[in-house]
Length: 369
Ligand code: FAD
Ligand code: UDP
Image (cartoon, rainbow, N blue to C red; front, side, top):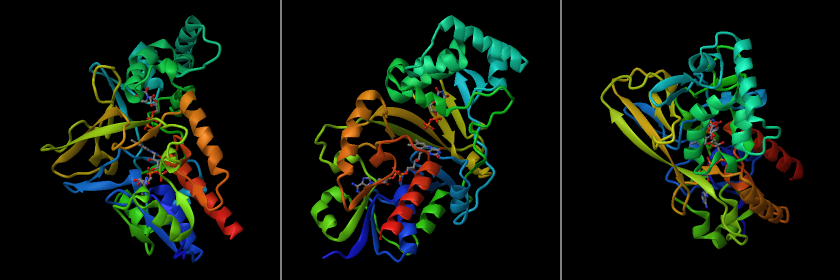
C-alpha cells in the first residue's frame, strides 16, 4: 500500500526543490536524508555566530533569471562577489585570470601586451587540439599561468595528472583582459542573508523529512511506501554497482576557531603550489561581511573517495563517463524512479543548474500526472 506519491531520497538542493514544487501540486511527499541534517552540501553550521560552510564554500551565482527569482522568493541575497586570491609560494595573484594577474606575473600594463604574451606562449607550446586539461590550460592562458596557478592546484585537487583530466574543468574559470577580479561572469551573485539553511528550511516547510535515514538500509520498505521515487544519491549504489564503482573526489576540512578578528583578509585563498597539502583556506565570516570578535577558518584537503567518506565531485574522465553511461541507460527503463542532482547524474553541476533542472523536471511530472 503506497502512503506517498513521492519518496525523495536526499534533501540537497535537487531533492528540496522537487519536494517544494510537488507539494505545491498537493502531492504527498516523504523526504529521507542519510545525514543528520537536511540541505546536502549547502548546509552551514553556526560557530561563533558565523555560518560555517560545512561541506565546502558555496557562492550562489547564475545567469538564469528564473532561478534567481526562484531563490529570491525564499531568501534575500547579499552583494558578496567572489574574488579569491592565489598564494603561490608566498606570492599573491588575483583570480580569475585577468589583467591584475597578468600584471603581477609579467609586469604587462595593457590588454594588448597581455594578449601578446599569451599568444607567444601558446605558439611555443604548439597545441592545436586541446584533448586534456593541460593542453586546454596552456592554450587558454599560456605556460606561465599554467605552471604557477593551475598545475599544482589541479593535480592536488583531482589526485591525477593534468594530462589525464578532461579539458572542460578549467573552462569553468573566466579569462579576461580587464582589471576585474570577479570569479564569475554571471549576472547574479551573492550569499543568502542569514545563511543557506534558511533556503533549505523554507523549501522543506510542511514536508515530512526524516534525517539519519539511509534509503539502502531498508530499500524494500522504502520502495513499498511510495508510488514514485526521486533519487538524488549515487547512481552506481542504486544499481548495486553491477557494472562497477564510479570514482569520486572527496575533501577533508580542518576547521579552526581563531582568536582574531580577521585572519587572511579574504573569504578564499587558494594555495596553487603542489607541496602545500591543502588547496584553499576559507575564512567563512567574509562571505557575510562578518564583524564578530573571533573568526573561523577551514583548510580544504583533497582526498580520494572511499566508502564512508563524502563523494563531493564526480570525476568526469573518459573511463568514469563511459561507466556512468551504462548506468544511465538503465535509468531509461525505470517507470517510477527519477534521478537528479550531482550524484545521480554524475555531473559537475553548480547550484543554479541543479535548481534549473529540478524546476524543469517538476514541471514535466506535473504535465504527466
Ligand atoms: P547534494 O547536495 O550532494 O545532496 C544529495 C543529498 O542526498 C545529500 O544530503 C546526501 O546525504 C543525500 N543522500 C545520498 N544518498 C542517500 C541515501 N542513500 N539515503 C538518503 N540520503 C542520501 N555550486 C555553486 O553554485 N557554487 C559554489 O560555490 C559551489 N561550491 C561547491 C564547493 C564544493 C566543495 C562542492 C562539493 C560543491 C560545490 N558546489 C557549488 C556545487 C553544489 O554543492 C551542488 O550543485 C548542489 O549542492 C548539489 O545538490 P544535490 O541535491 O544534487 O546534491
Ligand atoms: N583551478 C586552478 N587554480 C585555482 C582555482 C581553480 O587550477 O586557483 C582549476 C582546478 O582544476 C579546479 C577548476 O579550476 O578544479 C575549477 O575551479 P573551481 O573554483 O570552479 O572549483 P570548485 O569550486 O568546483 O572546487
